[in-house]
Length: 111
Length: 115
Image (cartoon, rainbow over all chains, first blue to last red; front, side, top):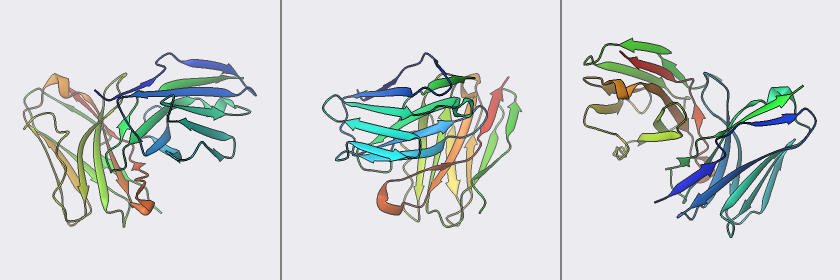
């Protein structure tokens, strides 16, 4: 069955370092992959989308890579700040409206 | 402009009662989703509305769950005869379908607790 895996353990990093979050998937051929940020008690907020034919996408301090051979996406936050602390979700679709979401990885940036 | 709004923000109900959850999408967004998020779980797709097309109800977990969208705008998710396992956060999202990439804008959710 289709499966998306994100590290369920929280990731703690020091302020100023680069945070790297992983999204792995199996039994799936995604056309698009999205990353969302979710703060406690709030709905997810869209951050970035990357297409299957794109290797990398950047937006300010954020960078997403997409490796369809490894079936993996990496999400990087450079020069991390305590305000970046949140849960980050990846979501995939084969090209339709129906996205499958991962369970998210909680990031904590320590001052 | 205004984002997606949901009401109520919190709902506590007794087992066996019916509940209605409301979603106001972003004006002009033709697509609307309902998801359920349980503690430690990913977002579980429930139902999808697109314009006047028949909704995709494939994610509804049982026939106790139903949803409607009136006038292509406001949507209501109804859970009949609630059970304790229905306790979760119910999230609504809307999308403009721009570029067909389905970027979703989420509401704050309704936290449902069934006692």
